[in-house]
Structures are given as C-alpha cells and as structure tokens.
Amino acid sequence: MADALPADLHPVLRRVLAAREVTPDQLRPGLGRLLPVGELPGVTAAAERLAAARAGGERVLVIGDFDADGATATALAMACLRAFGFADPGFLVPDRFTLGYGLSPGIAELAAARRPALLLTVDNGITSIDGIRRARELGMEVLVTDHHLAGAELPDATCIVNPNLPGSRFGSTALCGVGVAFYLMAATGRRLAALGLVPADVARDAVTACLDLVALGTVADLVPLDFNNRILVAEGLRRIQAGRSRPGIDALFRVAGRDPVRARSSDLGFAIAPRLNAAGRLTDMTLGIECLLARDPATAEGCAAELDALNTERRALQDRMQDEAGELLADLSAAAIASGAAACLFDERWHPGIVGLVATRIRETTGEPAIAFARATESGLLRGSARSVEGIHVRDLIASAVARLSWSGIRYGGHAMAAGLTIPEAGLADFQRAFGAELDRVRQPLGGSGILWTDGSLDPGDLQLGVAEALAAAGPWGQAFPEPLFDNHFTVREQRVVGERHLKLRVQHRDGGPVVDAVAFRRAPLASARNVPARLVYRLDVNHYRDNRTAQLVVEHLESV
Picture 1 (cartoon, rainbow, N blue to C red):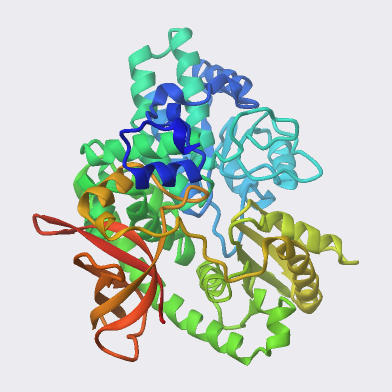
Picture 2 (picture 1 turned 60 degrees about the vertical axis):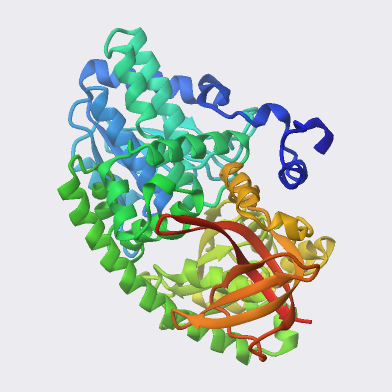
C-alpha cells in the first residue's frame, strides 16, 4: 500500500497513511468527492415533502437531541429552513431528566401545542415508535433523520432518512446526526431551486455555510472518520480557520482559549464540544443551540460565557464522580474485574448528565467498554451511558446482553463507540453478569484489554517540526482514523510538574539526536528526577508558543525501563 502513495511524501507520513489504507485519490479531499446526496436512503422523498411544506406555507418543528451532535444538527436544520424561506420554523429539545431521549409521546404532546404540520427529527427518531404514533394521532406528520441503528420495528413516519436502514447500500454507515441533516438540507435546497422557490446560489450557500456545524458534531459524536466524514470535517475546519464560521463557534473558541485560525479536530473534540455538551448535561441544550444560531457576536459571546460557566461546574461534578468511580473500582476484587463487573458501575449519588464522562474514564482505566449508571427520574429505573474501545461495538454488545436475560424492560440505543440504556434497578446485577459474559466472549479474539496500538518507532532525525507539521496536515484525525502514535526508548533529561497534575519533560532519543520537549497530561513524575531511561508512546505534535512553532511529544504512555 505504501508503494502506491506518492514518492515525494515524507517516509513517516507514507507509512502512517498506508497503515490506515489511504489511497492516492484520497490525498486530495474536497466536497466534490462526497458520496452523492441522492444515494442516502429516504433523502429524495424527505426533500420532496419539505419542498411541499415550503410551497404550502406549512410550519416545520425540528425535534433535536441534547448532545453536541443533536445540537449541531438542530442548528443546521434551523439555519437552512430559515434561509430557504420556511414559515416560522422552530425547534424543541427534550429535557434529558424528565422526558428522556428522542421523540417520546411527551415530546409529541409538547410539539402539538405549537401547531406544526410537520415534525423533523434530527439525530433521533429511528426507535421512537410510540412517540411517532402519538404525533400522528395529534395530526402531525413526522420526517425522521437519524443515524442510530434501527430496532426490530421501524416507526410509522412519512419518511425515514438514515444510512443505517436495513438494506441500505449507501457508501458510508458512519454519518452522524448532523451529517444526515446536512445531506437532507442539501437535497432540499436543490429541490427548492429546481422548483424556482429559492435561488440556486442561496440554497447552496446556506448549506455550505453549515460545514462548521457538521465538523463539530461529527468529531464530538465519535463516529468513524471514514473518507466521507474526513471530507466533511476537513471542509468545516477550513471554514473555521479562514474566519468564515458562525459567531457562536467563534465565541466558543474564544472562551476555550483556542485560536480558530489554527483549529484542529482535537480542538473541536476536547475544547468546543465539552462546552456545548455542558448545557445538555446539566440544564437544557436550548442554550447551546441558541449559541450556535446567534447572528451577532455579542449574543454569541453571552451564550458562550454561560456555556463556559456550566462547563466549569460540569468539570467539578465530573471530578468528584470519577473519584468515586475509582473508589468503586479499587473495592472490586481481581476476579470481579475479570468477570466484567468493572464494566457496569452504579452510585446513587451520581448525576445522570455526567455518567457518560464517567464511563469514558472507567474505560480509560480498565481498557475495556464501560457503562456508568445513575438513578433516572422515573422510580425504580437506572439510566446508563456506555463507552467502548476500538473493535467492540457497544450497542450490539448491549443487545446481546439483553438477549441473555429472561425479563424485559430495557431500553437502549446508540452506535459502535457510545450508547445509552435504561434498566430496572432491581435487574442491575443480572444485567452486569450478562454484559460481563458478552464482553468476555467478544474480547477473546482481540487478545484482551490494555493493548495500545502504535505506528512503530521514529528515528532521531524524525523528531522535528517539519515531520510534525506534515502529520498534522494529513488529518483530520479522529475515531477509526487515529492520530499517529509512536513508540521509542528515550532518556528523560528533565521533568517538572506544571498545572498541578501535568508533567513537562525534556527527553532525548536513545540513539542520540536533539533534546526535545514532551508533555504528559495527568501523569505523576518518575521516581528519579533526571537521566531516567524510559519508554514513551507519544504523538509528534506542533507546539505554538507566541510566534514560535516547535516539535513536541504528547505522551500517552510513560514507563521507566
């Protein structure tokens, strides 16, 4: 595969791209290389129905979701519907603590009070059997746009747009909610232009102006960055870097202390998305959507400041819950951990909006899929959030665990890397055992947990700015298209703690070469202060300090040897 790539690529970059099965024609991504809009299942019929609604002056109400994917999809749909001249479009997002996920019967009744003719779900709806039935009883049609896997029964919607529909031949199953919404709005814009209802350039510009939202939601939702998604993320990042993103995203970059001119997928995933998600985790995602829809910098900055304050509160709550999760893990015996009991943890003090972040930390600690549970608002129920590792499809893992049980009452949904579920509290122990058994079954072929895959070693001469810049430019990196990790032995010449819990290092390759900077986040110092032989697994990154750019190692694993 490496031989097929251009010879003028740096050898390290050729090796990295070949390992990810990148072909020469994928080195020049662009919107013209996207999978055709009309091939997405259901998109043509849904665009026709929306065009009819626009022509007839029917009101459309968008039903969103309370995570970053749902928020960006809601904002994208709203921005496009407004630009297309729809009659007073609106949106409604369920409160995760009272109404739960998706188009439930309760949300249908709230929606009916606003008197829309048509409900448009984004990032939800494929499992909303009862809610869509109730919406139809109340006189509303429903268009479903979703990317999650369907259950045994499809909802009785007017149209369903989903790349993961049974029998779908669409070339990417990895589109997230905002990606599906982007495809539908592109198809709708084309149809409206063909009917003479909207100028073609207005329709096109309205959709492409939303690529910043598509990039943010795609990275935040942890869907695989296949070639189609890499195009979407790369194009969105280009808009942000060029100063053409919306005021709300610019404001979120500012409160996060990040420079949009140098925006990368890691900024979206680790700085922007958490602030947006804070609204949905602690209060109401309406604030996040209003930030994304803000039309002037002052309004956007006010919303972003509120989101930043919520994120600070979220971090404090998360730190406490993660400490408690660590205590629970410490109390488990080795046998319990081996049986998978560590994969399902519950504490009655935990906040239901933060359990997904706790599951992420448990996964990082154990190296295996994890579910963290909190009490739901409904009596006798637990609401859990699951996070997985590469190679294990957590939604399917939950489905297999449920199939082992003799009782019903479990609701679940999601995708490969993240899922949500609700179970009876009395059934937690049974579900724990079933999930542990399924986990044991699927992890055997993978060789167990705790494996860290790397791109091999680098020579001393490769630890320089030019190589770091070439690797950064080859992105966007993300889920299923991981940023390169390298593995070498070094001598740690210096180390010091910065920011209370991070380790700043000066290291030298075992085979010589220059001493380079390195940073290890959330890492205690090595026992000896200087000249310690150590093995590092690291990313070769570009460090920006004032007007200087230098190569820096970002350490993922550090051990004395």
